[in-house]
Amino acid sequence: QVQLVESGGGLVQAGGSLRLSCAPSRSVFSINAMGWYRQAPGNQRELVATIASGGTTNYAESVKGRFTISRDNAKNTVYLQMNSLKPEDTAVYYCNADIRFRIVDSGRNYWGQGTQVTVSS
Image (cartoon, rainbow, N blue to C red):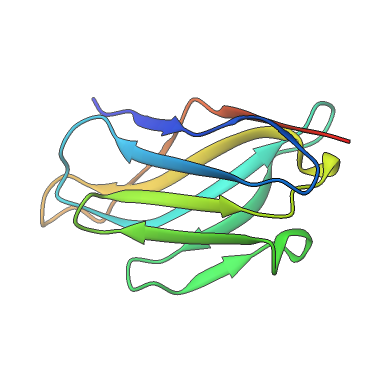
């Protein structure tokens, strides 16, 4: 079994920055798409940003120009650089990845346990 391990959450003032990281708990063959989602209390989980294995990115309108998703394929790690944070960015952030364990696999979808991001006004 494999887990996605997230790090980098915390408390920051409005206008500040945080960087989230996420990687599998053990070695894998490769990872297809990776992404970040978030869920605020009382809200549904929503997409923040995704990045394909080739580097194509997709962002929610609410974070465009402030957040940057990137990945290091050699480390099978995805990052989310969050700048100009706003109180409305407060949520639990979840990593998502489509993992291949063997060359013949098409990929299995996994979620991280979530990391809290709190932005104070």
